[in-house]
Amino acid sequence: GLQGQRTRVHVGHIAQVLERRMQDLHGHAVGFTLLVQDDLWAVRADPALLHELLWHLCTRALDAQPTGGHLTVTIRNVSNEAPVIGAAGALPAGDCVAIALRDSGLPVTTDRLARRAAGERDTPDDAWITRVLDIASSHEGVVRVEGEETGKRTLKLLLPIAEPRDLSAWHDPEPDATLEGRGELILVVDDEH
Image: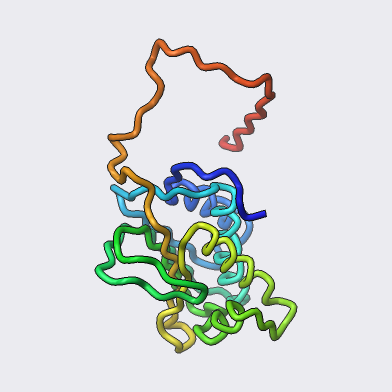
């Protein structure tokens, strides 16, 4: 389902993990640039669903460039003075985190997003677009495409921020606090050499 565990998430951290996976998978055949604002606000999200959403967007963008190209993912804070209309809803005015993907062959157009949001499908390959829209709307976010010319399109995902937006207002447990688990095992895998 799309109701997973919501917590404060730094989208930049998820994107950094994804960047390493993309480089492992695609090597240098396609350039991948990740730009994350230093003081990025957090969003309230399910980290697994957010990772899946970014995975779908990035892999489809890279798949659309079989002979090479470049994908740039920019993640930054945005304050909207008016509501933002997207393919499957609207985001109220206010603060949000914007994730923008720009490449030399982005396979999504405004029309294609609108058809998916309306429930239409024109190819079996479009199931991923519906999944992206479902995940975005379950997080109260919106997806939109800016520009229609191939090679000049930007796909934007806007997600409302988690309050408080100031990360210094978040509290870690006191150093003396006793933390109790629930008898669960944790597997830690470190793939760094």
